Image (cartoon, helix red, strand yellow):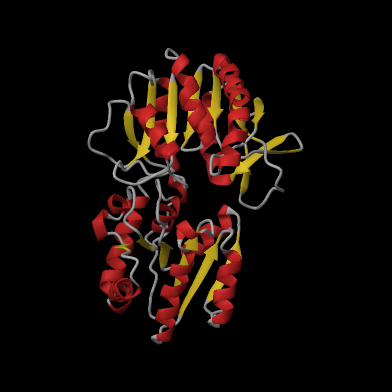
Length: 372
């Protein structure tokens, strides 16, 4: 089988190996286990490989580089007009070779893939929509267009579209799905974390405004001022880092807040295991792996009620749905800190739920999609 991936994720080559964003590559290595040849259509990265990047494991890869583009300004729109015909042609040529077409959405390259796949109605296809599928959530026009095409069973034939959460009014080709980070063999007994001494918080994600890392810092700051021994580790990089560093310095939080940068999955795993709470005050998510990963290791999630997060947290029974109001959220956090029984039962509930979604189950479900 020749498996063709159309994605906006930047790729780089080092030696004879292809690298890209680690969580994405680990998932694609599972998808490609059953295929003879892997064709990847994606932008070529010029950035040096970092700790967060991972390598494809497939022995037979053809990489087709395309230019990235956006339509965020009038100038970029004009550039896109000249770029897209060449990109679309490369996608057409790749899809001609495919036994199975796989689209990664949302993204501008994924949007072109959504359009091109229309002329290949008989080829088996899957699309992974990794963003927020909630029809009530306001999204950019290009995202809405991708969702409309993927949901249109006249334009999108022979395709299963994987989305996070279950949404009323979905067409028959929309399949509620999940993602995973750990294998069955990695499961541990319920971690007995005490909150009698230092309380550890962890934030994992890109340091951008939409993820609201500053709110995570402010939550811990207020707890510290109230006399609690707390610490927050933030893992990730992004354009907000300088602003966060300035805030930490101005408020003298160096002893309770640490910016760890991008780290390996093993380092993050160890950090989850020693943390009590995982914080994700994000404006938008698909399936927030950070929340599921933290829960897998007994962290109580503190997350905003976006996308499928309310389902993941069982509407507040497996963690706290943040209101993005410091005083209101702090009041709820203190109910876990002051009540050992509530803390323990919530952490156990979160861990049991998350440990159902292992990579073993994920691989089984992928196999079904590839063979149907």
